[in-house]
Length: 144
Length: 211
Image (cartoon, rainbow over all chains, first blue to last red; front, side):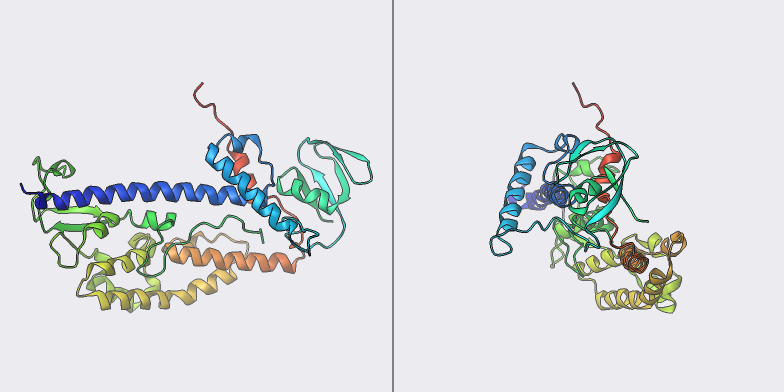
């Protein structure tokens, strides 16, 4: 059995190795895409149950992505900065009516008053304070 | 419309696969009837039906697309790939007769994707296969577009069940546009919503991992 006879078998094995590599890389890449999406849809601090499922390299990646995004946002508006993760839908009003979907403790708004976010309570709050909590499923936007 | 932040890698267009596309990985898992044109020493264990140490030349095996593509060489010294039934002349005539009648989900579910990939194997029927794929798509597209733009708030399973993967994606896209427009017309577009990613993660609780 000469070496060149073995070539087809070697080639087959090589295809299998490449296939495994492709599947692994695609899986890891898809995870990264989802982790990136979380920065936009959840916020800059991930909840513990999600962090639990991330490996340390992914946590590091998230932290660096966060930093890149933050420095980009700071550079907008002639150095004044702009939070582009807010107002993803064009705002119609400064204040909105929200209902609390679960207990979330206290929320302090800009004039110093403290609101208790108890399940099922309704509040009339500034939109920018609520946006992230609505995206996270803590509050529900109520439209009359 | 829910703002989309998770943008998965799309499948490739035509004969190209996208390396990182999960859809293309699933597509390339499909099995094809092949015949070895040379011997594969020491790989007899892959061929469950016979008990030899080597795979002899002329063995018929069902290999996944990714392996068929990887082994195939133009001079045909290694592998020859047979056309699956749906791409052969018999079925092609059925498709040209009335493309809308066919259940492409049963024929696939990756009828267009696999068909495009078959063109890699230098069949003499390649031009006819390519034509058949194109004409079938053209014939069916109008109905898919119309139904996706007109089925609002109803059960679409009957419309969708005979579509192949690519057509289903188009249908979903049309529905998404329709629903977005309707929601905007009702003034619901400015209502802030919870992120669908977050809601999905909520549904999965942490199960106890090993201590």
